[in-house]
Every structure is written in structure tokens, then in C-alpha cells.
Length: 230
Image (cartoon, rainbow, N blue to C red; front, side, top):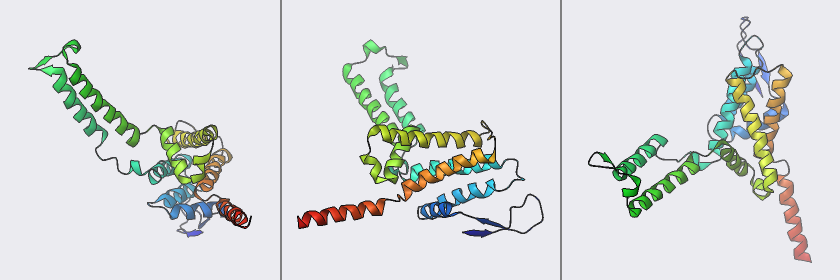
């Protein structure tokens, strides 16, 4: 894939052409088939990395990759798209219920004066709030785990210890790009930064387009065919 660029002589201008290698092209195509601007984020991260005159190129590139990883969570976890009321709204509603129990005629009601029925009712409200929080505002590892499992259906059949290793890998990549984007880490060289980019590319491509998916389908077909002739 080739993007034609402005041919201005300004030293801050990018090179006239920027080409994706076969692995990058495959990942770009896989992302382009999804919703939103995932492919654009990926391409932008690669493109800005190729601007040696830009002193902030690592940070800008890392921000694109960090944003890509965040948006992939939403793409592969429908609960994050439909969370309904926001955290502030849910918290305010919970506070209203609590104040009705905790205060009476402008005075604070001591815990030992609150009836068991009222406490139980508030516990039910708390249970509902925490269930909502875990579903729609999960921790980052939980977000990564959901996304990976939905990207690659085979992940659901893996032993938990191996699934955890995949989540660890994804989390290491996310943290690295986040730290670089926020100026908390400065890459020592192009080679170091690009090694993380390539690791992310291979990780995502293996999830989005498993190279063995067709082979597995063919193997299953042959097994069933063999069993039918047995």
C-alpha cells in the first residue's frame, strides 16, 4: 500500500512515499474491515514514526498505537458500547438511596438504628452497582482478556495459565506505548521502539487473522469425513 505525500522541500515534510510491508499490509487490511478508524490509527502511528525531523515522533506514534489498543477493546466488547448511564449518574443515584437511609429530619441515623430491612435493601443496591461497574467499567486486565477472547475464538479453549500469558503480553505492550506517549519513557533507539511495534503487529494479526484458522476447519472436516466412512 502506498500513500502519496506532499513533495514540499520543507525538512519537516514526510518522504514522498510511505509503503507498508506485507505484515503491515495484512494487519492494516484486517483493521480496515472493522468499525471506526482503527486502520487509520495504525497507519498514522507508522507514518509519524518515519519522520526523523520530528522530535516528538516516538510520543506521537505511541499515542496512535495506545489509542488503537484502547479502541480494539471497545470493538470486541459490546458491553463497553452500551453501558447506559455514566459512572457519575450511577454514583449520584446510589447516594440518593443511601441518604434516605442514613438521614432523617436532617439528622444522621446511627448504624444500630437502621433496620435490617433497610440495610438489606441498600446491600441489594450496592450489589447492582458493583455488577454494573464490573461489566461496563472493568479493570484493564479484564478488558484485555475479553477483547483477546473475542478476537480469537480459540482463546476460549486455552488453559487459563496460557490465556493469562497472552493478557500479560498485551498489557506489557499497552503500558509501553502509554508510557512513551506520556513522556514517562524515552526509547533508546528506533530499533527498541520498532521492536515493540512489531510485537504488537504480530500479536494483533495472530488474533485478528489466525493463520491456522482455515487449516483447523479443514482438519475438522477431514476427521468428520473419516468418521463417516469408518
